[in-house]
Image 1 (cartoon, rainbow, N blue to C red):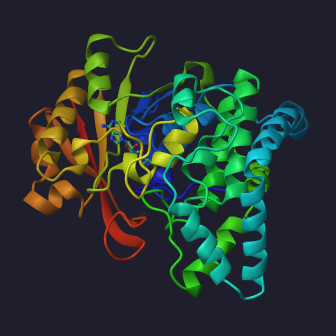
Image 2 (cartoon, helix red, strand yellow):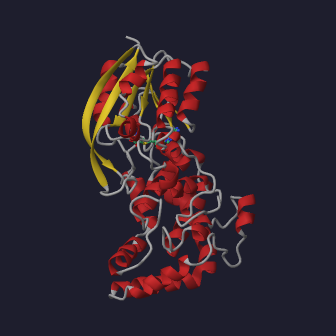
Image 3 (tube, rainbow, N blue to C red):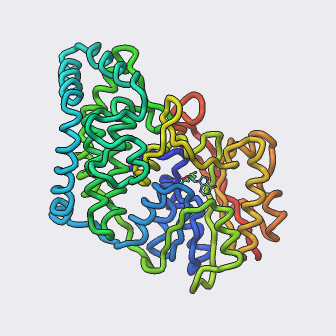
Length: 412
Ligand SMILES: C[S@@+](CC[C@H](N)C(=O)[O-])C[C@H]1O[C@@H](n2cnc3c(N)ncnc32)[C@H](O)[C@@H]1O
């Protein structure tokens, strides 16, 4: 079960990893914009890997795969440590949500029999209420914000029920999230990664979280019904048992960071990572106007679980990171600063960028010229066709065939 991720290099990862391995077989590789860790996982069997991404959910995925503890918890262990806490949280939420759970259940059953209008009315009525929704008998949003680990965990039920997820699904997510918080620390990232996958597979949205679907006709209401019937819990267990954790050359030496990539490289230039003879940077920065913090805000909130406020129809986090890589007017100077910071670390750089990326589309800049300002040796190292998942981040089709170039900047 994979998370569909905008700009994923999953299909190209074996080629990119082989290229880096052939040219720098013993290097430690820093994946500066790790995303769902496609490149890190391919490199990890032969290289020490440092993964960085500005988002907490991406850092969680990288930790689950590349650092602690390297094994998937046995199903019996997982059941024993998650089930009691899950049940406690679910019971507390079910008490306050009982009526809405019943209405949703009936509406879904009727949709099965061809009456989709009941589900449409129920959903429209629900999403017309202010967000976050105060649940009877539970603390207020502000009380939860002051103590984000208060029980019962209720964030998804208050923020996203009947929007991205159903009422029952939100209860399941909150209760699993609570159980994960109480699980042994070495298993938490793996469990969270499985929950990230479960949420991605059940969301009533176009595959990302920039907006949820609103019922308007039979076709999309039936689609919402199909998503709402999916069990988060069942998908969580399926994700957990299918999780492949890569064999790592040096798991204890791998590390994961959550930082703006340029800032992180500027720090590395002063304070090099310990015990690294040769460092190579792989960079796969955002390449379109779609801000990842808007398209994946629900996953960020799932991991941070901080009751962040909710703005706009998409119920976005109030404060979310925005990158200049996704701003037409700033992308060139952002790229320039990034490459400058990479060169200042003394590391070679492999930079992935699609030919139709924001920077090249706007200004017809040749990335090699930009890189030559900072590296003495620059070349095009690889060119591959790639089907980019746009996830609605670009107008038109859900996937787009692009040519992806990988440029190399180095010293010899
Ligand atoms: C094109 S995606 C990387 C995809 C990744 N290679 C994969 O295959 O899954 C870009 C990533 O950069 C992250 N990001 C955006 N701005 C960033 C910044 N300024 N510093 C670090 N990471 C950033 C996003 O969260 C996103 O995961």
